[in-house]
Image 1 (cartoon, one colour):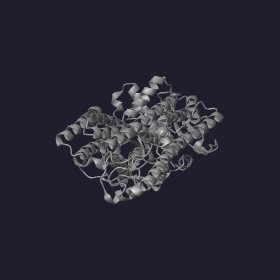
Image 2 (cartoon, one colour):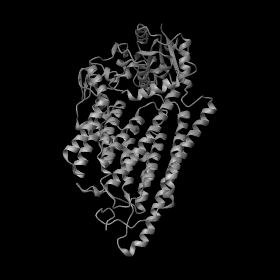
Image 3 (tube, rainbow, N blue to C red):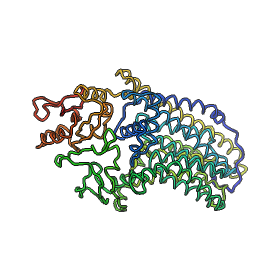
Image 4 (tube, one colour):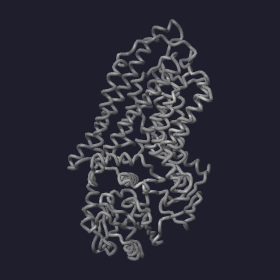
Length: 612
């Protein structure tokens, strides 16, 4: 008889493997070990700040100052900045030590993610147990918990690094809590779990607008699973869906209302539409002007308030209109790009989907551990129970809702842009149910009963050993990375991984040129302006003018400008103190007229031209 046939009698009981008995005692130890090694990242993880991080930190400042108007932002949402603001306040951070505080905030979010993954694993098991008692499964609750934490530890080594000031780990935690509540509701039909799902999804939305769409997918999953598989009465299903929707609206509604009031239309965030326009529609991402019709792509563009153009060639822009942000152009990209309306195009979507499919394959190759473990268990005789029959809960469809939601997450990002940090939660919500669905093979006849019991005992022992081994190897790799980072930091004499001598020297160099907190400055080149503007935040200044240099190395770009002096005079007229650029490996010579007055900032590759 097939191993995944739920209508067949259960196999004979198999004595529990010694390692399976060890798992409950090992699990608290592993939780402590995972937290300890990840705490090492909070101390020694390297500097990884970019323009996104600076925007989130600026929003955190506005929250601490209770500047509510500046917090309403169509591109970045306020939940993660609220965590940053709380960490800043509790640690009494200064501009020189705020990054250390934010690294510890990320560590706190990692701990929250540990709780979320345990809740998700427990809810999978709870729904599995409520669905069927006829199958002997391979992994128990503690083994699935351990595996989930192991995958979280691996993610912290790679795409969810504590050194990245980004909300993806926080979003993942809230989404896992939401799916855990959904599965708990499906297992028990209790309204409180539907309410908890709505609250978690509301928090996820306040972290990233992506969760607005995902919230409705979760509610649809609740309705469809209870209606088709569980055959519950429509009024009971509807009441649970309404409770979840109401709780989501209570948490997310005020921000949606504030954003809609600001934009004078219904709006829950425009990051998805803008990214679709940029990545699929071919619309120019940076500094689009109304006359640049050739760069509109397939989008309909009627810019409401584009960046103010001061000079056409080279393109010089002013951001003085935006009162917030260290680099206002990236503080709220939806403000400068308001009324860009992308148009769906299958012809453009297909190449993008192919490209994102390749990135999915790359992600899987970059996370092979769990896939190899799953393949090995299948080769050793484990069988997935993946059949189901609508209306028959005993047919083990417990894996279906989280798996389909994980596929949906991957599919939504595949339409626009796939990055590893976006889809780790999808990877977890697909893999963990698949592992939970693995069952032990059972004999086809009484003659095979005794050998089969011996084989299943060996399989249980091996599965337990492999899960423990993978968990310890993942923690060991994290420990190795932490020790190597510590060795590098001690050799360089840094106070912590968050410390960037380059940024410190740039800020000190600007101070020696008479630039003080509150002043405005200008920049040229993508490195100084967009990719790493933390130097400006550290110096307490705002970048209000930019000479746009899209690709050319800055020294070559400036040296080749025929109207260089005119461009510098236009920047000087804006009242900015200095013009800052990253010259890379180029060394300025006083004999070169193009760079006669440029001054190096503290021995770094950054230079500044004093203007006013």
